[in-house]
Amino acid sequence: MLKEFFVKKKKYASIPSEQAKQDVPEGIMTKCPNCKKIMYTKELSKNDKVCVNCNFHHQMNAIERINSLMDQGTFVEYDKGMISENPLGFPDYLEKLEKDRKKTKINEAVVTGEGYIKDCKTVVAIMDSTFRMGSMGSVVGEKITRAIEKAMELKVPFIIFTASGGARMQEGVLSLMQMAKTSSALKLFSNQGGLIISVMTHPTTGGVSASFASLGDYNFAEPRALIGFAGRRIIEQTIREDLPEDFQTAEFLLKHGQLDAVIHRHELRETLGDILDIHQVRGDDNWLEN
Image (cartoon, rainbow, N blue to C red; front, side, top):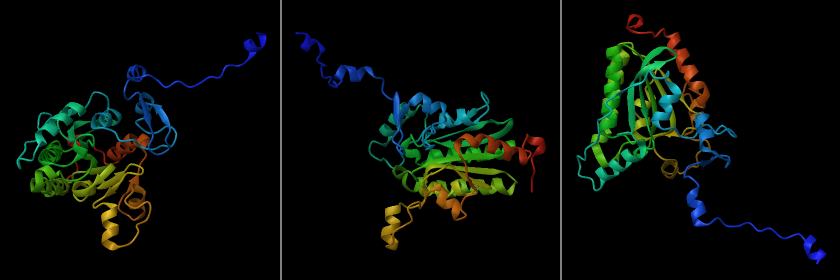
């Protein structure tokens, strides 16, 4: 009997019941796609969505970007109520837009507005890849164009954060024409001495990379961001050659002279503030025109 008392009982891992699984809040943990480390989502958010283990830059939505970038309480949004129509009668397009609006709490794939970065006033446009993969439709192009025109009116710099899969196929040629419209607005702004800063984040592809994303006086990117026009597989099939492993990454573009710098997210606000300060952008009285 004593022998039975001292025998160690084997312990077996139990499989959580369905009820137990349901009791764990969804989204409480996040797995890094790079190093596979699992961390609390709150910890990741506090670190500007940069992995604490490997420095991998997770995607930020527009609201998170505004909160990490702008001086607290200074951001004023433009054209918040502007929403897309369905000019081509594309099946289920409006239903998909409404679903994304409910999921993301924004009305389109870009948020525009004005505010301050380290006490320097600026107009910003921040694309959001959680809304239709950041695709550029008529409303995205119109909001960006209006933001550029507002920066021209206020005589302050224009900063754009890009994150997009390219033109929105559901709007066909109306989407493609936004490339020319936004690029023309930037040219007019530049001709008046306007300062343009482009920050390319993961991913910046298609018609967005081929238009306004690449037209900054300063062209920056976040580490390891995917930046390119056509997809890797299409290029390899076309040229019948294997591409370098780091092809279309921010680091590859920097090495080949297509970027001015690759900037860690923790250093971005400081860098942008320094650039605005160097250009002495403090308001209307210090606007430098050609």
